[in-house]
Each structure stands twice: as C-alpha cells, then as structure tokens.
Image (cartoon, rainbow, N blue to C red):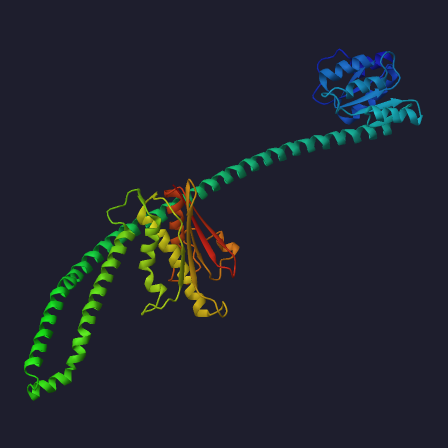
Length: 456
C-alpha cells in the first residue's frame, strides 16, 4: 500500500505545486491513496501532508485551492489545524472539508464553528467525495469570478467617479467663465453707457445753454424797452386824452390795459422758465459728473436730489399736481468716497423701477381705494457704513424673482421696455466697484425696499 502511495500521491517534499491544487491531510496512507486516486478525477493535482504541522507549513507556503483535513491525527488534530489556518489573513479564505469517522452532531458543529465548509464521513464513498469537492471547487471558481467582477466594477466605478469629478470641475470652470463673461459684458455696457451719457449731457448742455443764455441775457433789455414804451404810451394818454379815433380803436382792439397788466407777468414767466432750464442742465451735469470720473467724496443727498429733479416729470403732472408722493427722511450723513456718476446711475435705476411699478399699479387700479402711490427714501449711518433705503408701496416681488433680479439680462418688464441690465449694473457698481451691498426686501402686496450699504 505504501508503494502505491509513493507512485500515485505527491509527497510533501516534491517540487512547488501548480497555482491550483488540493491538499489532503491524513495520517493513514490508505486514506491518502484513496483520496488521491479519487480527487485526480477533478483535473487538479494533489498534494499530501501526514500531520497538522506539515499541513500548516504547506498551506502558508503554497496556498492550496481546497484542503481535505482529517479530524483525528497525532500531534495537532484537525480542529486545531483548521483554527490556526482560519486565524491567519492569507489562509483564512481557503475552504476546509473535514474527514471523520464520527457521526456525532457535536463534532460536526464544532467543525463548522472552526470554519469548515463541509464534512466527508469515513469510510469514504467515491461519488460523495467527488460531489462535495466539486461543489466547493465550483464555489471557489464562482467566488474568484465574483472577486474579479467586483475588482473590475470597482475600477469602473473609480474611473466613472474620476470622470464625474473632471466633468464637475469642467462645469465649474465653464460656470465661472460664463459668469466672468456676463460680468465683462455688463461692465462694457456700463462703460459705454457712462461714456455715451457724458457725451450726451455735454452736447445737451452746450446746445441748450447757448440759446438759453441768449434768451436770458436779452430779457433784461427787453423788459427795459417795454417799460419805456409803456411810459411813452402813458405820456401820450396824459397829454392827448382825446386822441385820434383810429388810435382809440386800435387801443381797444389790442386791449392795451390788459397788455400793460400782463407783460410783467410774461417777462417774469420767461425768466422763471430760463432759470428752470438752467437748473435742469445743472442737474444733468451733476448727475453725470462730467470731468469727475475719479473716486471722490460727495454728499449722497445731493445725488438723490439731482436724480429726483431729473425724474420730476414722472412724479407730477403739469401745473405741479403730485401723482407719486416722495417722502424723504434724511439722516445726518458724512461725505462718501465713490464714483459719483455711477452712484447716481444706481439711484436713477432704482427710482425709475419704483416709478414704473407704481404707474403700472395705478393704471390697473388694483390696490384699493385710498391707496396713494408713494416712494420713501431714508438714509442713516453707523461709524463705518452709510445706509440708503428706497421703498415703494407697489405690488412687491415674489421670492423666486428676488433671487434673479440681479442676474444680467433678467427682466420682468414686457419686451421692448427693459433690457434686464439696470439692476445687474447697479449691483456691480455697488458691490464690485464700491465694496458695498445692494439687497432687496419684498413681499407680494407689501411693496419693495432696495437697500444700499456703502463703506465710509
């Protein structure tokens, strides 16, 4: 029997085994021979060990695919051998099938608790041994395939995560580029508007000032000439009271008495008109701050008043009747370092928007009786900040729209009535160029407040 074992079963001292092999551990040569003959039908090579110590040594060194382990052996028994193998990370996953002649359930339970995957009872039945071993080999192959698939899946997930991260970073860069482009567009439009405004105001001031000054300069001698003529007429009436019938008729036709009474009023009205033209030109100059584009200190209230002056035609009807009430509550403010023309543009944008809203509400008459369209302007300051609040009592702005009103090209006005750049430019002027804040507070049906904060 020993000779047969030497011929058919590989001994413990043979050359290194292949990558996959079955290790049979038993102290009985007959069992080793039978198992070697039987398991050769699996197509795998067989290695043997005659005790637990040799089994542990071979397992650590070569990592067999499967171990058939006898329970009762001299020295280290099968249970202890299995426990030691399962305690080591490199050998813990190798499936162990116990071989025993015992039929006690407690022995089987102990074996399974040690980490065994199956039991083969002695005496061996070839078909049972092959069936149980093949099941474990198939499970091993499935586990290997599963590990390979998992590894491949992990690599795919890692690659996908890497691709998603790159895509996210690319989207971030594109978003930043888009925001920079929009900001640049707004800045270019702002610069062009301010440049155009300067040229426009300069041209208007020049073209209107010349004839206005001409009229205003001639009003004084005109008034003197007419006064002299009236005195001359009075002398004629004094010394020639009866006069000539033709002269008397013309005097009645032209209503000389009315002319004498009305001409001073006409002269005064013309003087008031030319003075008002001068005030408008002055307001335009101050609004645009021609030749004063640099950072400088200004009185914020002057900027508000100049803007309101330019918008007076939208706040009241001819004859001075107020159609939109303006309530001002100005606090004591220090002068503020700013770009004056740009700050005035912010005031103009906010006030124009407020007037637009109030005009729309008035035309639709949907705020009820007793409602008076009103704009309230309040200013105050702390040690480091000037606060300017411009409030209207219109219909308000929904929460969704409040998050968008400072976006470039966003507008709620009908097509052709708004570019969507006014508040975007205003926000850029206050936040980016002045280091301040521009916020909106609003609720539907309760009006809107635009708050400007400027550092002192």
